[in-house]
Image (cartoon, rainbow over all chains, first blue to last red; front, side, top):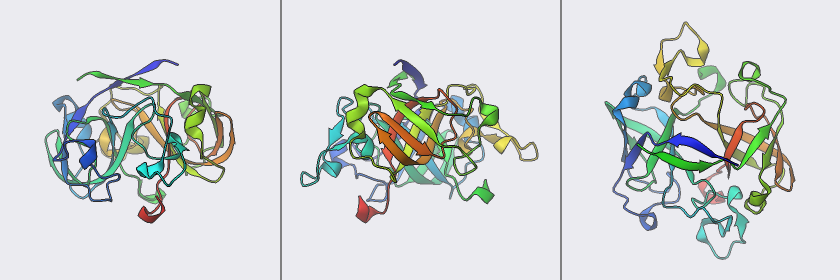
Length: 136
Length: 136
């Protein structure tokens, strides 16, 4: 299977310095953080406002891509499970999905609440979170 | 910004032959389909069973990566909006997120319900969908 040409579009700026500090999910105590995008993509943010919910897609560059199975949440009392049956960052393609809320938009920089990715994590995509079918 | 080394891990097998046939979201009439993974990743599926809800991450290889703004859902009556404020497949990194349910697991092949990606779409990641904090 071949490599796919995924481009970094920006990065996370956060007080979280490394994986040991980071909560496992955004609703488990993640801090506010910034998405600093390349200004070339500013036009793609047009229409995003404070209060919007996003799904931010990152590349978890500190993950171990060789791991296929883990104890879920690092809990040794839980049986070893395939990484696709978990949310472990250690997996063949360490893509992170982060649901967070927009607090501010300044040019190509977004302030968001509750992002559990560490400082410097590459950002690859930003998507508005989907509401009900009728609201699309 | 640099390219990121994302590897294809499998592909979608579907009756949907091209974008014109595909619904916009999985809950808008998408058919059952198959995720055919490279057998090298079979161990990463261990623990996935029929009835589980997944988030499948794809690379929408037929998208136009040069588009930064669109009429949402192709509706010309809606104002042009930045692609990050929409779910358009046309965006700088055309990453698809698809929530679907597992119907069967056979080796490295999953049958899933409600997948709106077209036949041959590269798969890059599979994640169990998250339930409530207490169920993780």
